Image (cartoon, rainbow, N blue to C red; front, top):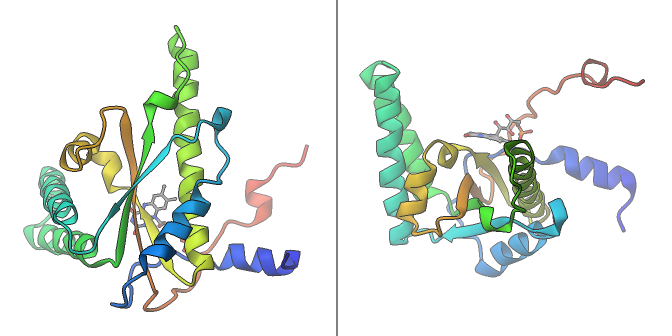
Length: 204
Ligand SMILES: Cc1cc2nc3c(=O)[nH]c(=O)nc-3n(C[C@H](O)[C@H](O)[C@H](O)COP(=O)(O)O)c2cc1C
């Protein structure tokens, strides 16, 4: 087992990376990353996470890029952004989706949840499911980091869950949570700042 110092340094050195080398990521490496992601903790050990790996040149990836960027454009137009800014942002989103060596949708399966008769406990149960899926997302990023890959969590599917479900023909109970891009990093960015411990921790 590596020393605590080595492990802390490893955890702190994971960065969100948005630019990748063209080099393909072997399928067995992606499988290892997902194999470790599923060891995240989950409420009732229900393991609500589901992953959809979108192959680099597959029809599903192209269809998702088209649908998501169309919806993104509609939102930006509704926000009243200048047309040139809309075009630039939409083009960037499309390019990222089409060109990232690996793209993985993370969904959470509502079918894994306990059912309660009252909204208070049902809401808590739903939050637990989403929290559990998010932990698998972090574990995925850390496992990718362990492989010398890097990547980023993106939240686009949260804004258009029904669209993502339709385009990828996902079961009705799967709630899209995130879209991960992974690859061999073109460059590791500087670490974004963190709040100091004394700003975020209360000792009582
Ligand atoms: C829930 C969540 C949603 C995020 N959504 C996006 C996103 O849509 N686009 C993006 O470029 N980065 C996204 N990020 C990455 C964050 O911007 C990044 O984690 C943060 O700036 C800290 O940088 P670091 O990950 O390198 O430490 C998201 C991260 C999380 C946890």
